[in-house]
Image 1 (cartoon, rainbow, N blue to C red):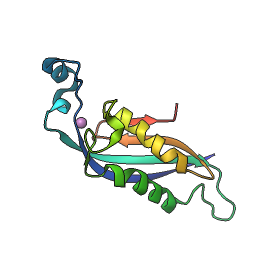
Image 2: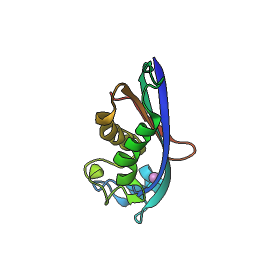
Image 3: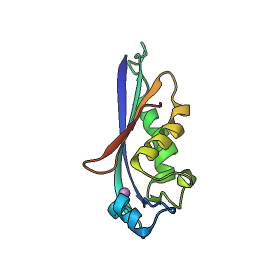
Image 4: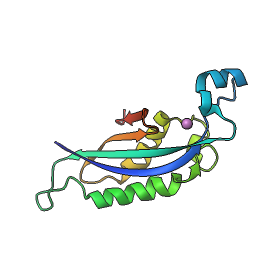
Length: 135
Ligand code: NI
């Protein structure tokens, strides 16, 4: 089994805020991420597929085609967008790194062919990233 990872980069704004809670509780739990007027992140996205190399190409999957899928399914939907208001995916869930990684999996997975999606790693800051393996 071999693994191939494609990295892409995009920017998006969000805020983490629970309407059921008081201002103080939101501030306590989410800190700066609860800022009412949003804040931005420079996201690094790592999409890893797994499989056996094709005998003709040596590829698990064509890396350019994987990049095209990521651009079409993720970057065109999320780059330079406000996750809370510009896209439909976070109406019922927080736009946290964890939830975002799962949304990205759900958008990319149906388009992977000849191999399987292994991991979505979404890096939100230098020190924080989430990984989702589909379960
Ligand atoms: Ni944030």
